[in-house]
Image: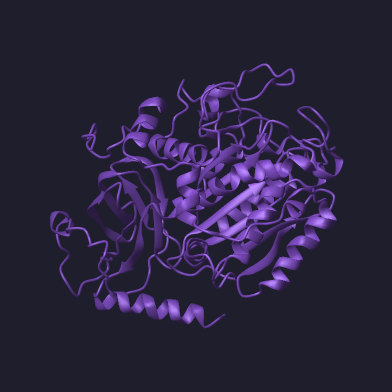
Length: 468
């Protein structure tokens, strides 16, 4: 085992990509295509005939509606709003009890086709949805993933652009922008001071949706090269790394490593269609260090709703020929599955009121005074993506006394379940313990919490489940 380099994480959180990648490989934290295939085991896949076709808006809508009709207990089809030209922005939600958030169950999302002429991600997500549904109950790995995760799949964020795009487009064809001629990946509120953007309907709907659901992890699928890009996409004071740099590199490299060849060093694609930048010679990159973008979606996701998002450039051609889709699907299917599973590499649990036993919404979760400060959801449930190491995790709220817990994450046990009880300032029945007293030993990750207070949260969960 590599010794601690900083006081918190085994992985130096602000170190060079190559150092982190070396650690991930040495400690076998990431797995390759064949290993993941073995982990998942035998599963039903789609036929080559099913895979080798494109879906325009009408066909995509029919495809999604058919899945919702065939698997009503496992998925539900929603629209989060409409595009400029009135097309629905479809989201298929897949899970056991898919219609509502279940307290304690993390929320994941994939979004594709943000640039309308970048289409493989759209097709990959349609196949992924069906793969999860047809294997439920027969493949243990995929069944567990569906049972323990609420998965949101948006095949097309820019359906108007897609209808203008043309099959065979390698790099610079029509359909990239929305119907108003706006690049949606430059349309989110910017970190940098400058002219405000005119937020488009598609962008606004994504923002509203992302703030209404407690998304933990996300990926945005693009096309045009073969690489994973992570925040930040722009520089501030000469810096483009987040305070969760080790986590983003781990997320990005985990996807690239699970792909059949994305992780390999060397030329990404044969050419860049006249662009004024060169693709990095490895499978992942910090966005701004590749080329700077302001107003990108992944930066906004991290900064505002607190969802960790990466951008996956799936393949070199933007609108590949239908006959090429089976090869791309085989390249990506295990990476798409494994990336979803990373949502469970978290410190997670419930933050509860000592007096009432109810969950506390909007309590803050901070780790070693660095990285993103996250907030609990309305039931008090929370999730904090993390890498191996020992951390001081502080739970706080304006109306409560803060509590700090010591948590150790190992490479063998990347998930840590931790319930925390906060004492309200107004609670006079018992004297408040000192901060030192409240730094209790961590809850054993393998043991259920027997505190009577926790019974109340299960009662709350039961009430929620009665809705289904």
